[in-house]
Image (cartoon, rainbow, N blue to C red; front, side, top):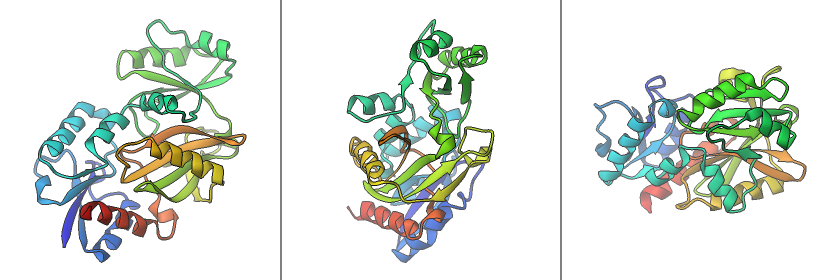
Length: 286
């Protein structure tokens, strides 16, 4: 039986409940999977046939340490999924600019530099509400909604982030409130399943940490096609990917392409854990 390690973080040493859905299907395919905390110096990573990055949800708070660990795995010749090059590219949300240059429609986004006035830019673009967020973040960390009528607090956050990991500003898409945000999950480039995520009343964040919820749903064909085009821009094809975005008329606008540590909602779709296990087996036998 082959063995793999599912990398997690110190606060979730036994994996998320959702990720544990994967253990049994892997065993049925002759693959023993165990949780391992990425920052634990006692873990013998080379003992496994491969490492699948899962709920490393503190990476953005320890980025240099996390990337150094990824580098050591890479130097050892160990198979890592998604690949180290993909992880390095995806850990900074400036990857959205790369995708936009390749023709992928993204939520309107700008990338502030020094002496940037948020109020002036919002007036120029006619945006009533914007979202300020770090370029390196997870789970809506330091993400703030800014109203055009009262931007000083957003400007303070923007200036702080400019001095740190960098900052991005996206147009707030009201469809997140009205219709929800799509998350489409792909394994080895093939669409598996999707959920529609919605924030709790009075909030804009769809993550569970802030009271958000998700429901299994079937996206329109144009949404699946647009998400597939985004995946096709990534080389090599990722083992797993989550495409987050919103419908805007008859277009799908990408908000984030999650290739590092996304929740994959395996509990929400029958057969999805088995499809993920098949994808992992295909990588191990390639």
